[in-house]
Image (cartoon, rainbow, N blue to C red):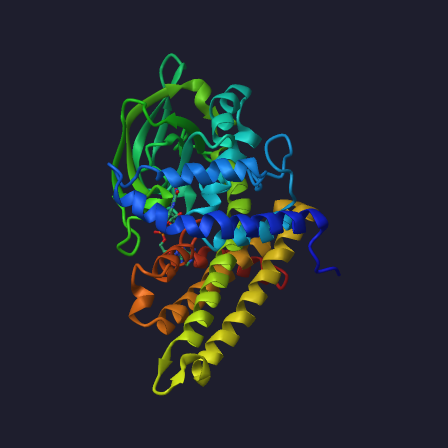
Length: 406
Ligand SMILES: Cc1cc2nc3c(=O)[nH]c(=O)nc-3n(C[C@H](O)[C@H](O)[C@H](O)COP(=O)(O)OP(=O)(O)OC[C@H]3O[C@@H](n4cnc5c(N)ncnc54)[C@H](O)[C@@H]3O)c2cc1C
């Protein structure tokens, strides 16, 4: 078993680490300042555009896409340590590299299931980082962790030329950003169908379609999450789109959602590990610099215990994430199903715990806007819900485990 990264990964890691030091970390306060001066807080600060141009110039672009026809052609195992590095500045770096959710998952859907026309119209500008996109599945009225509950209707018009979309979604990431021009909407084309996993379909709904209302920004622990383009409530009041906007086939929505979530989940976990590394770094810097009751915090046994435990925990989840990436590369996303669930359960929990200790070590500063910790904590905590709550993954993983004994 070889734990070393290959030459290409090492080369990209070195380049990316330098990009983070020279461009991304210095841009963090600049983005904050620029956002405060924007006409709308949902607009994109100019520095983000500059970061994107520089990343693209350096070949640090679309690293997440394994298909070389569209992206860098890296395996999951090659991409994992790079995504981890971007997680150290999760509000800027993934966007700078055009590797930010939900666009990544949406690009994968279009690359894999989109028609030639759809790829030309929407995938190309997304790959070029010219527009953003959103994925609209969750609904306030139903338990959406069970996607068969979705009630949004996607009805074929009597002459068959259009689909009419009616329903209400919420927590639709990115949708507040005016650059978000396209929604992939999950709804039901056959609500009475006998197979509950074939009732759903996905359609592309451009933002400017009459009947699309981006109603409000949902908060996350009190934050509006501007840097991610917010998480919007979006209402579709009989929005009409051409029939050609169907993604894949009618009844294929559930399967596409499953295919989309595998890579999406591991990408989140990779970035979470980077968030934990940033927390450990901040913890150590603070511990050696701050003195209480006559000695540096770093000399308190309890602080040493937090730091040691954090290091052990992050190494554990990293190994599990890398193993999962390797399995996805070697036996496919389906073959890695159990491990994808395992990392989606283990990583957010572990990282939330590390961030919580880092907040504690920083005292009031930890919950303030002067350190990234509170915002990182809120972001990590939401990942125990988004892309499937812990309990749903636990249920499915336990069932698989138990099956062997039945
Ligand atoms: C910041 C953020 C961003 C998001 N972005 C998007 C997005 O871009 N697009 C999108 O469509 N959605 C998005 N979501 C929504 C997210 O995917 C859903 O919140 C998630 O799937 C859970 O659905 P729900 O909120 O309806 O919870 P419910 O389905 O109502 O579940 C509530 C709770 O019930 C428990 N539960 C559910 N099932 C089981 C079970 N089988 N066994 C035991 N307990 C169970 C769990 O504890 C779960 O948390 C986002 C959410 C957040 C917080």
